[in-house]
Image (tube, rainbow, N blue to C red; front, side):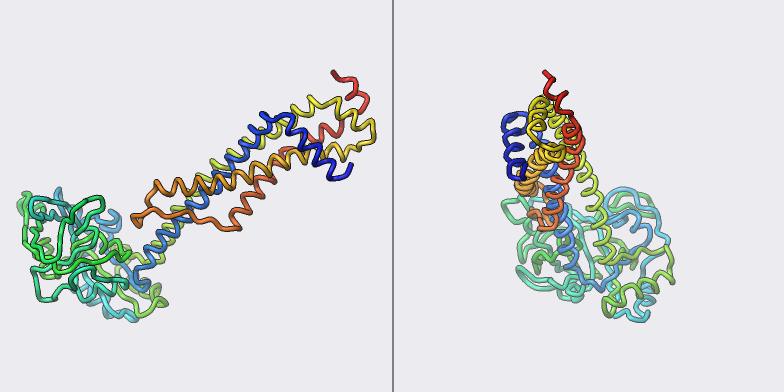
Length: 418
């Protein structure tokens, strides 16, 4: 038997058992589709987060007290409730000057942070507030642009600039804040002396609205001058975080080691590179978990192929005997069933490839990554080729046992079977 005859007989055999063949192909298709969809969405998420954090200046080190570092973003920055445990080290002017004096450090930017209630006319919202030197915003957000207005005047304690998402909250029909508007900002805190709940309020005028920068610190915040922030947030000169600016990206690791040698684990240090690495590890773990589910689906499909071909061997025992009686070799029968498995794998993997691409696009439209907008899945030729070959290869492997069983049937015994 030549290869053309083997393919024709194999295809006709699958056609004769349409329902069983279609169900087996669907098993392979589901596994392939899941692998493709998961891979595309995982790559999309990693790319979206990476783009967001690449908008941050790569030569910046984010410094916080170890207490805040353990609590995570936003921890220990004030607001209603009991005060957080005291940090092991207090970030103050002395710490700023000491870090600034280190080799390869070009600047240190100090910040106050908190959670405040903003009252605009009859509406109130809770927002984050960032207090720092307004002239240095461009350092931590190189892509900074103003939609309306301009930067803060350094000596104006009553002006504030707001992120676009704060001025125009997503989903709201009307803007919450507009240029030139006055808004009341209230900070709630617990007095460390009396233990009583207190509030500090101040009126600010919106002098600028910032376009989205990709920097999460700025894109969801109100920005005010340091003097106003120190007073409103009751900080008494104790900073919540620092931005240490290395002279170049090549010196980031050196600066981190120098700061760590001074303060050990009493201070928290994070870099853009470390953030990206953490994100990649996190998305990689999720992707691995979902891939394991897809692999299980492929294994189920392989079991389906074994069952289908094993049943076919039993049903076609007399046919196998006839083929051998007229000259077919064991290798011909082996090839006949392996080609059936191959065809199931090709059909299932190809349809699964297309279904996975469509499923990935549909799922990505309903899932919003960290940048606030849907991100299309990313498919590469190498990934699709790898999934296709895994699916087809696993199908062929699944067909080996039934094919060997069929090839070893003796012609006389096969012809006698009912």
